[in-house]
Image (cartoon, rainbow, N blue to C red):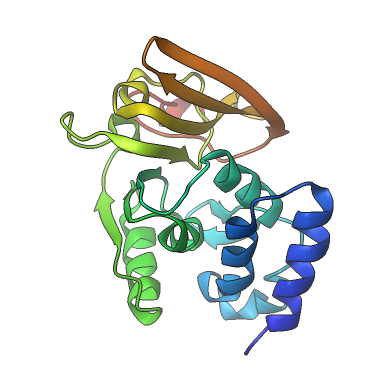
Length: 216
């Protein structure tokens, strides 16, 4: 298989060696072909320990950060997950192996269409793509076991909190335009438990409850 050795090296030295423990996450990241989610002219960098450009001013996140965020969702396999920011589709492809159904929202239509083509090529059928303002989440009646936001928010939007199931987890980078901290929010029967994970830098979450374009 193409780049199989590189994926194994990525998992062992970028992920496992740096504290990623969830075997399901590690196996998914060894399985999903990251190079298929970027332009062919940078395939030689596909498994490097860094973010890479995907066009439209967006990036595919560093593998370690993808693993950290995915692990914080604490998925067992039967969950319904909302992903905010489809981007290249790489994060969604990983989630498709770890949960039952993925609803993914992308504001940039060209990226959503490109991701849809890749999902079809890889025969991924449990990802439901939506083009729109991800800060609005989806239908107010829908609730999710996990919500993952792959763009930086100035604050945690209530729309995400309101759409978490009891015992659900929200993973989101929060901070200013240039530096954020990764948050995990767990919804309990009596309220919320908020934990911080690691400093990070993401592209801004644009939308009604994120950053306005003029602020970026």
